[in-house]
Length: 182
Image (cartoon, rainbow, N blue to C red):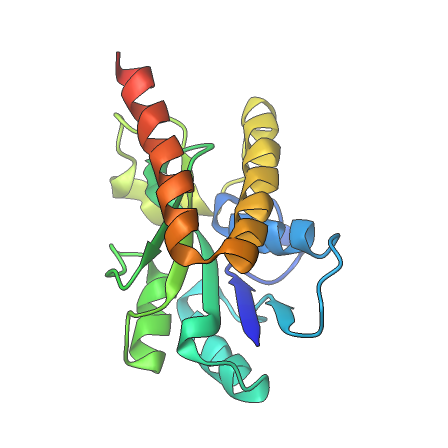
């Protein structure tokens, strides 16, 4: 059983915010036909309480930690990018902090989606306000492509495994960042 979790905040008010990009990937994935061994899950709690819901979902669906994939926004990555990681710290992300605390481990797979339009300009002073803002109209096209690519990456993980997915998708992101810095 694979449990794929998209983090975000509940309610229509937050649907298109930067913090909810993980839930938007779940919406994209729901268009695909999966077998009965895949559960797509959007916690019904606010981001900072995600851990309680994820722990309950693991138990409810009898999924193991090795079968958990958490999709979430990442302020340290450029808008439009994604990075697959495993067994890493939360880097200040309150939803991930909550999950690590509840599960008492950081050893689960994460798909981190970049939401920062200008990675050179840090927005940390007003991080809480920034992540609950909607994407601009010009950013939304990038986001739609990012969501589609994230859905494809999840399908690749399910078919080919985590290591191959990390090698391919993380290398693509590395090459892109290197090219944009040239």
